[in-house]
Image (tube, rainbow, N blue to C red; front, side, top):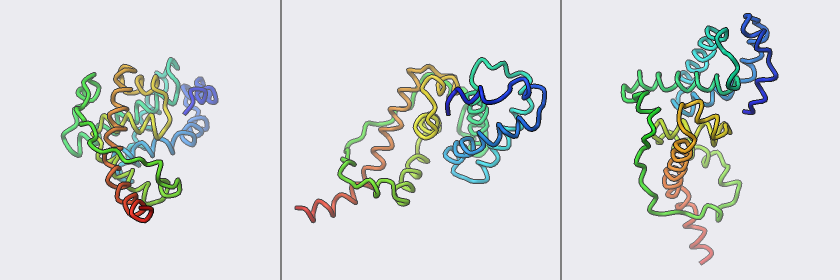
Length: 203
């Protein structure tokens, strides 16, 4: 979401508690924040909790928002932390300090790459294909998944993703590369099975 979106809202009105202005913010950002929660947690109820907690947190702290970052960056930072804290409570495995560390997961290099360009676009974008992608995204380690969701699904810039997650841009790029490689390996089997019959038919 573009940084210019911040300029569409009156920070003065938001800080003063203008309910109508805050309702406009909720209308603008509810969908992307819900998607982030859904992609991170895989549950509609959990995504709704992330959405609700994000706006409650934002409403509480709007008076302290100085506008040094864009409104979208600030909201994504709150939503990301809410999602990670919920994952930590549910699984008791995600350490937030580790998540923000500059260390990256050792995701192995793919052994086999499938040429997806051989598949027709409608198959790549089919409901089944999207389900396969969603399933693969859910298998990503949380720190890689968050970077992938922000950058490749929500279209947040590398710079803003780094600011949201309190990482360096280099670390964001590294995690994004690892996430994409992880997903490509996972999906190679799925698409490989669909390419095989076509290759036999053409052969």
